Every structure is written in structure tokens, then in C-alpha cells.
Image (cartoon, rainbow, N blue to C red; front, side, top):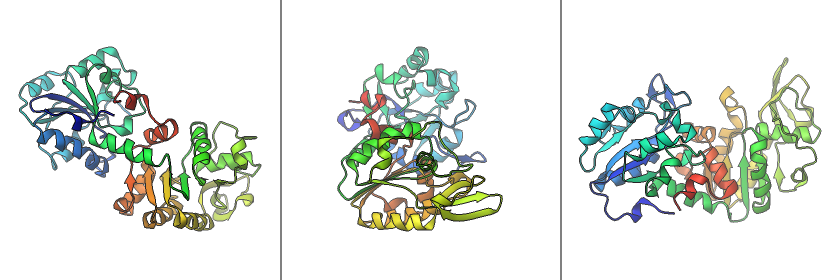
Length: 371
């Protein structure tokens, strides 16, 4: 992979930097700084070497969302300037005024519909901003958008320090040291089934939880009541009988009679599975304690509804493990941040979907543009 450290002279060069700045906001303010902290090393590197760095990124899902609160937070760390909308008069004037080492951040790329469509016109507009393209947005490395994929076809493209680190650390867990444990939570079994099948071959155990586990329970003939399940049917799938597959042994359910913990075979038709029970977490603790590699993506319960217990207790066990520990996924990272455990893991990925795509396929089209 071509990395910015391969470039000998950046002084005075216009560098288009794609960062991961899709940061949760509350009342127009940055709620946590994890992604900002991960974006800083590459920004600092370019700043210190005298590059004229133009930063682009997206935030949120709606076109009207703005990166201004992120810009305001960034100014606490680096002398960053606001450049306004991409291609605007304000941006062109600001760009002309840039000196060596200056950093200019532009507005949300998704304010232009050409971003998601990888539209040729928008790609060209982006490519005109720099002489060199540096992609540091690992969290968006699974999306073939204009600012991640298209512009890499137009300019000499290099990986930023954080993207290169993400690929390096995640590549390590593809060939784990044994005993190894992969913890996979969340939903959408139709997208995660290839991952389960692949890692059942290379890992000693794969634990499936969250809505993913509901799909397995349903395929095994258990009652799942009103629980969230995927559209896909797993009935008859070979991996269901794999002795390496671990599933919750007890679950927290909620129904007309309130909340309770019960065995997997005791769920009633009117109840909904919302979390793993304490017996499951203790079972996992035994595996975590023995493991030399632990890989984890996705929460175990309905995290956004407040069912956080199994995820948070497991996070404490993984943080205390002597294993090489790698975690990723929005809610998983949110859980360890809330518990202030970030620094106790070997590596914390900023990617959710990008992490899973890389683990499944070994690369992504965006990463291929940097090779």
C-alpha cells in the first residue's frame, strides 16, 4: 500500500485529504472526540511538512448536515480554517490564500448528490482541489463514493497514517493466534453470513449474538416470539451444526408480563429477545480468559434501547484479557468509550461496515486504489 510517508517532499504541495469525521453531534456540539483523535496524526503530519492541506469528509445521512461543529472542535487541536462549500467562491478565495502548512476544511461532501453516485462532474471538482490525494477515511473504505474512490482514479493516491494502521492491525486478526475468539453482534445475517462461515474455519470459536442469534434460534426451531429477525432463512445451513459456533445460553426478554431472564427454549410467543443473560456472559468470560486473540464487532443486545448490560460486562472482560484484542463497530466502540476502556484494547477500529468488509474479503475497492 502506498502511504504518505513514501512521499519525500510535501512542502507547498496541495494535498486533498479525505478524513473520517462522521462524528455524533448533540445540540450542534461534538459528543465524543474518538474519530477526531484518530484523524489528527495524518493532519499533523501534513501540517508539519508544509503541505497545503484541503480536508474533505462527510457527516450524517442528510445533505443539510454540516461539518461546522467538527471544524470548531478541530480548532482546539490544530490551526484549521473553514473553507465553506466545495467549489464555492469562499472556498476558491480561501484556497488561494493558503500558505505552506495551512489546513482548510470544506463542507460535508454529501451536500452534493454527486458524492454518493461517484458522479464524474463532482469527482473532477474534487480532483481540482489537490495535486495529491490522501485517503485517511477507513470508516468509509467500503463505499465507492466520489471522495473515497472516484478521486483516487484522477490523482496520485496514498493512504493516510490511520487508514494504513487500520489495514495493518485488521490484517493481523485474519490469521489469529490460537486459542482465538470472534464475537459478532448486531443484525442483518444476510450480510454477515459469509463472515461467520469464513471465521468458523480460521477461529477456534465464533460467538453470535444480538439479532443475528435470533436468526439461528429460529432456524434451530426455537420460539423467538416478537424478536427482530432477518428476511433470510438459515434452515439447513451447514454452519449451524459447527461445534465452533457459540450462541447465548440464556436471554433477557420483554413481554406483557414485563422483563425476565430465561433459557433459550423458554421464550414465549408474545415476548421479544433483547439481550444476553448473565450465564451467557460468564460462559464468554471463560473463553476470553483463555484466548490469545479476541476480535469483536457489534453489540450483544438492543443497545440503542438501553439493553447494554451484556455488551458492557463483556467489554470489561475483553479489556482485562491478556490476548491481542481488536474491536470495532459504532455501538461496541461507544460502549468501551462510555466505560473509559479505550486504551485497554490492542486496537480500536473506527470502521463498522468497512471493518466487516475488509475482514470478509481481505480488501475493498477503495483500499485497492491505494495499492
